[in-house]
Structure formats: C-alpha cells, structure tokens
Amino acid sequence: MKNAFLAALFLCAPSFVSAQPARPAAAPRRAAAATAGLAPSPERLKRIDHLLQRYVDQKKIAGAVALVLRDGKPVYERAFGWADKEAGHRMTTDTLFRIASQTKAFTSTAVLTLVEEGKIGIDEPAGHFIPTFEKTNVAINEASTGVFKIVPAKRAITIRDLLTHTAGISYGTEPHVRDMYAAQGLGPSAGNGWYTADKDEPICVTMERLGTLPFVSQPGEAFVYGYNTDILGCIVEKASGMPLDEYIRTRITAPLGLKDTRFYVPQTERERLAAVYASGSDGLAVRAPDGSKGQGHYVMGPRKSFAGGAGLTSTAHDYARFLEMIRNGGSLDGVRILGNRTVELMTTNQSGILHSANGLGFGFGFQTVDRYGASGMAGVGAFGWGGAYGTTYQVDPQSHMVVVLMIQQMPNATDVQSKYSAAVYQALVN
Image (cartoon, rainbow, N blue to C red; front, side):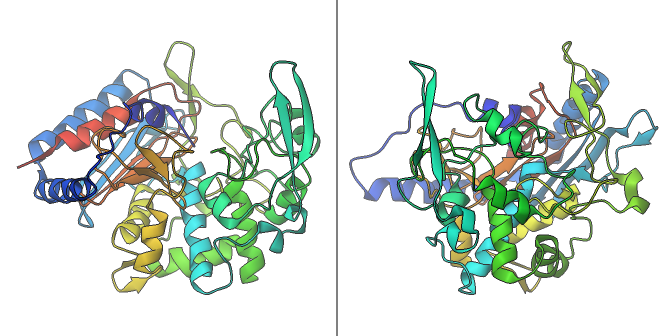
C-alpha cells in the first residue's frame, strides 16, 4: 500500500533519454559495478540506531524492526521500542507484523509459478477463471457535471492487467462507486477497502461478487491501485485447485523455511503479534481501535478469507528471506521457486509510464526503479513496495541488498521510512 515512505521517496524530476542507444546501456553497468564495490560501514550503520530510537523516544512510533541483508547475510538487524506498549511487550526481531500489501509479492509469485507450469497465461483473460469477469463494466465519472454512466469494458481484463494494476480496478472508495461497493460488502464498508480478514466467506466468493460491480477505468489505460491481487489470489485457487493459503505454504513458504508467514496468527502465538498504533493529530502514536481500521481479526476471526492482496502476517526475517530468493534469481539455498527469466519479468517495468512518468515503473508485483534518484538512493533496477500498516521494503541488486522496515502504524503520518532508507544507503562506502 502506498504510504508516507513511498510518497516522500518517489518525488523526482523527469527522466532523460539519450539519442544514442549505446550509451545508456553502458552507464548502468558502470554504476552497478561501482555500487557493488561499496560495503556498509559499521560506524555509519549506527546512525540507523539513533534514527529509529529517536522516533520511539519522541513517541512518533511505538516500535520497529529493521533488517538489512547484503549478499543474503544480515549486516544490520535491530528491534526498537514496543511491540505492545500497553501490555509491556518489547519489540523483538521475531515479532509478527501484519504486512498488508506486502502480501502482493507472495501472490504474484504464486501466479507466476502457475504461469511457468502452463496453468495460467500472462495475457489470458481473468474471465477464464472467474465467470463474473468475462464481461465487465466501467463507471465513467464526468467531473464537469458530477454525473457518471456505466459502460461496457472495451476489452477483457487479463492476468497482465492484474499483475500491473492496470485493470482499472480500485478499492471502491471513489464517490461515484462507493455506495455500490458498500452494498456488496466491499470498498469503504470493508475497513479501508482492502480489508477482508473479518469476512466469513472464501476470497473467491468475495471476488466473484466484485466482478458484478463497475470498475473505474478501462483495462490497460491507467494505473489504478485496488483489488487486483485479491482477484489473482482467487485465480491461483481456481488454477491450482488449492486454497491460497495452502498453495503459498506448500509452494513458497515451506520450501524456503518461512515458518512465520501465515494469513492468520495461531492463538498460542498471539503475544508475538505487534499491536497497531496510529498517528494522532499531534503526530504522536496512539493505540488504534479494535476492528478493521485497527487491530483487525488476524487472531480472533473467521479465518476463511485468504486475501492475496493484503492478508498475510510475517516477520522481518521471513520477508527478507523471501526477497533474497527473488534477488537471487528465483532460488535460495538450493530451493528454486521461479526461473531466472520469470524473475526478470517480475522486476522489470511492465506498465510503461502508466504508474509514473518520473523514473518509476511497475512490474509483475513490484514497483521498479528505472532512473537513479527516482526512489531516494536506490539503484536502477531496484524494486519494492510497502504495506498499509507502515511496513516497507526495497531490493537493490546493484548494492546486493535487501532492506526491510517493519512498524505497525495506520495511518502513519511520519517520514520514518524514507529517512530509514537514506540511513541505509549512506552507510555504503568504499
């Protein structure tokens, strides 16, 4: 989910395109070689300590876990502050977090394993798996008159559209569709739109209902962030014949040894789950309420909705290990999840300038960095995203790094994510 980190980090100037094709190809290689020769300075990494402890001491966040891998090995791993201040639980490096939209990377990986097996085609219509998506509609809002009309989609929504968030499908919070979505238990009536952990029904039932509603843009014409990956989660279930949680467990998390990445937290481990806080009007963190806009139903709930777009819980260690598999070309410690060429598809801009005209793209599950400076100090070829609860990550192949920050703050009005990213990169020196 886009958060303060993403908003702050991704403001940049227009990109420059050379008229000579040979030169732009050479420059990134030189930059990559130069960056690969840099290593984190232990002294400079201590600045991260001061940064995150300051945010805790100033009560802007309750706590955080920060983890940086270089060539798969931790060069920085620390916990700060409180996992649950009111209960007296300190943050630890194995604390569990709701990762919300960071779930999308797992689901996109699951989809692409099925693409590799020939069970899903990247340009195959979603309607081949979910009948209500065979013919979809679009609600066109005429801003000048305040009137909207519903028209048929110009073409079928494809797997590619869903992977790149260019299907025209939002979270149903726009004024001209909000009431229609709410009537179907979606959009604003579902917490912040993306939340389904309280639903007493499988995700495919919810997504089949979604397909009867109008979307907000024509397929392939705009980057619209919304239920796209939840739809993909249902398609994984249809194509594999397995519930999404079982498919992710058997094909991704168990082979990689990710024991703490699950859709719901066992009641015996509830004290490991960090509490959710929220930025108050004074900028200080206060405990969020129970329910969909706060603590959620990740321990006590129906446990029936496996939301591929926003449902997983995990640890910094588990998530970083998953990302290291991606950085390593689809395999880790002798376990192959994806082929190298598939990973290249995932981590390369597949949406042109629909996502951004300022040096950022969107691949099959990740935001991509196409120009240095578009995402802070991340190198060209870096990729990442974040979650609604304030979690964020970036993988930088040039620097051989995986960078993860876990907090639980929604809404989050701080700039801790962008400052953390800068603190990591400033530590890279000769």
